[in-house]
Length: 125
Image 1 (spheres, one colour):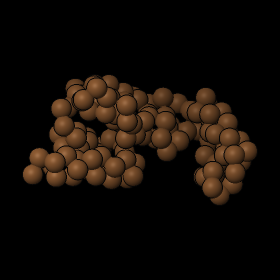
Image 2 (cartoon, one colour):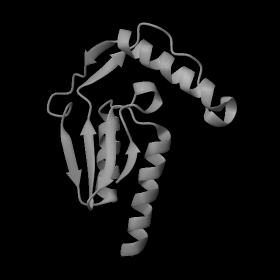
Image 3 (cartoon, helix red, strand yellow):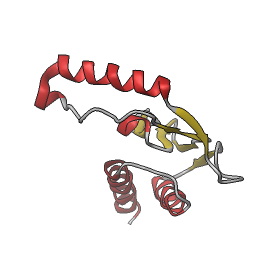
Image 4 (cartoon, one colour):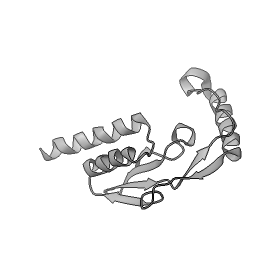
């Protein structure tokens, strides 16, 4: 199974969970978002700050998440829905459509899925 993005990405600010499993591309759309009541700590990458600082930051984020409010996403017929596509091209198109509907996806996840779609186009060309 390959994950392109998860709800937990970018400190729980991703609205789509997109994965490739068993020959299909699955997109799960969030039904709520977290509204943080406390500011998130500065990012701490493993390469920049080492394991201890990274883990400590993750613990801080989870504590903030516990105090956050869950806000329903107002997108009837879309929020909370699961989509299944047979190709990375169709999945990338769906992801872009969901972004136009206001759903949030990390840029790097968009790039990875579009790369996978380009690879599929090359195979079928």
